[in-house]
Image (cartoon, rainbow, N blue to C red; front, side, top):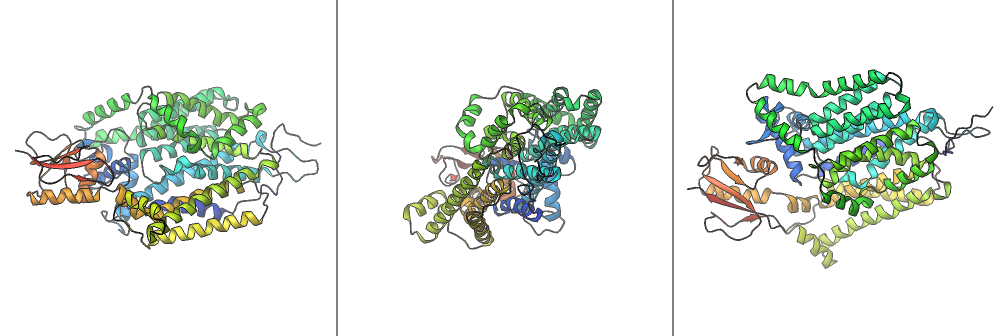
Length: 578
């Protein structure tokens, strides 16, 4: 007898042909490695994480458990991101005692690559577990030839990872070793644990709980509570978990405790005097995270959701439509429940930046998009292909056009726009240029292949999207990283301030009181200028004050003209305390 499944998927074995492992891994490596060409610190969130890692490396073992930058306790997130970055700096960075063949900043980029690898691996295996389930399989053909469960599961998992890489929103964070990046990895591990619990209940539940507890150590208390809550909610709502639900919940809570408790235990052991005050500050800040998000979060998402979730969101909507009669089946219900449970987390996540709120949804939406992709009608299969070819080809060509104008001034307005953003900059022919050339050549090789062939493999659309996103990111960073450094870097400002301080008699034992400083700026002034800036300096303890403001006016008491970055109203004024 024929076994007809009630499923909208009709996939032949030819359409499920394997995507070569080397090509998928090469794409992921290239995408992750583009961050190595961002040789400077471009954002304050990156500066804070970098400063935390350096302070752990140079400040003694206590700072590994009670992190701080200069005199500022870093209580906004747990220390796990700093642990990994500090370990890699010590092994491969110039400030460490290991091999020392990378700059300290490049070593933290390596940490970002590891977080990215953890995220994609957990996403792949979690999706693979769902796609291998019997109710997810394609319809059996009358004379055979349908995709085998193994090949079908692999192509769905590949598509989910490729959708994740191709999403515009992931580029904004994935190349920085941040608590947000670590949280993304913990969310993916939590998802993997929940899918593994369908086959191996206790092991999967423990892993899901472990990720929840580790989310507190790597990100925030709110994030850990959220992941634990959605895990327990999934056990109560999904029928596949109905057996031994109490044991599942117990193992999940046990895993959460195992992921979180070692940190405070070691912290109180290492510093029994300092830990109570530090954790009091940490708990107060974490408690403030439980509040309603501002209206600007939703306005931001309403304005930017189309591009931020592109090209995932159309396939998510199609998945909900095409699987509408099977939405109660586990392979769809699990990611749907996790997404739905995340909505209250968005509502009550008052502390997060607008785009961070929605970052952890990307892996789950990529899973739904992959299940939507396999149900797309043959007449519509090419839509993603042509969208990718046009969008990313135009993006790559635009990057090269601006670079050529920057080099030759052949198009004066384009060259002027680059010079306005990065005054005094000029193109350089370095390894970044080689990266841009190679990735562009590979991308247009893929374009030529798609224009001259009519492949039936289902992964071709997500592959072109992910390859195009990688090509654009590599071209922009590879060609313009020196200009971005000039535009975003604080190094010229710090050098100017340092010169003013040295002329006024500043020595290594001195400190400077900082007004308007963030922990990230404290870290940058310490790293690039050797200037110890204190935000909470006692009156009279520092001979100098550095004031960060938004006015370019020359203060009469200033020791020199204000230092500022290109095209910003941010200024730094040095004064002598009397």
